Image (cartoon, rainbow, N blue to C red):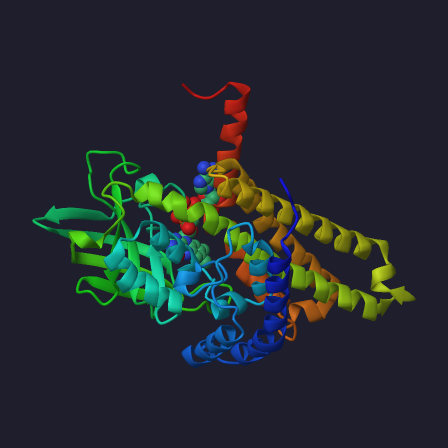
Length: 396
Ligand SMILES: Cc1cc2nc3c(=O)[nH]c(=O)nc-3n(C[C@H](O)[C@H](O)[C@H](O)COP(=O)(O)OP(=O)(O)OC[C@H]3O[C@@H](n4cnc5c(N)ncnc54)[C@H](O)[C@@H]3O)c2cc1C
């Protein structure tokens, strides 16, 4: 593969980085000191500035108001946006909307595009993806899906219980994964439905309290009580829910990796700045070998992560499912990000633990990345299966 980043992409990445530095990072302070976290007003303001700077939605096609970059092209651009946890929301390239827009762009019919995709692309509304269920339902193993959709004439009636639906609070609509044919395995008998969140029968039970600061729209626990949806609410084809989810999750795992690499890179820079300014035992921290090793390991692992992301993105663009490569990127980058932030805190000593720096906030927020979009253990299982298969030891 060719690792050259086209000059127009480099230019966009540079402009995104400058935008995040000038407009977004100053807003972090406001959010840090506000009990409500990021307000709608602040988000609207940042988004307007991103549109004015012509940096809106780098991943979306031009006809949807985006910059029309491909998956491989967005790698450095999303990293630049990800240098602040507010950067991707400001550019409308944050989870879960970014993955949902990708899925809708691939599979929504004309009416669904008008109702859901266009307003989402313009930033007028937000969305949620409701797949995970509390035990004993779907979690790491999505085939344990229990939410049911039963046909009733031309309609579907949905009953079930979801949680960890990111962004649910304030979202306009949900993508809901439900079993439509109980006689088939879940992987073949499940369907994604589109529903306005204020439809009768949707109960937002709570916004789940969690470690890692406030995310936009939180993470919702939701119950469906006889939610009635017309057959036009089906996204794609009946029974194809798992195939659609795969089309969403492959790229979405990589975009998470791209954005989190931005935060980890910034953590390394903060640690480096402290190490060159602070002295102990007669010399700069940066001149102590154990600190140098931490800096070197972080730099090396970030570089390895970028290469894994680039390669998997390139494979997906070639039409490969790149299951093993996206899993390798997800495990490695999620664990790297956690290690890099941890080392940065160690290098900064007490200041690293304080809320004067953003490191402690990132440390808390990054922990979940080893769990969502597939826990590290699950991705290792996927990788190992390929290793065994290649050896000729697949289960019959
Ligand atoms: C911040 C956050 C945001 C999220 N956003 C969304 C969202 O928007 N929409 C959505 O649908 N879901 C979302 N999720 C849910 C997330 O995808 C699940 O938490 C994840 O898939 C794991 O499922 P689980 O929590 O049920 O864990 P479980 O399935 O109960 O697994 C628990 C642990 O068991 C271990 N484990 C599981 N399988 C294996 C295995 N094969 N081998 C070895 N160990 C294993 C892993 O260590 C795992 O962490 C979010 C979660 C978090 C924390």
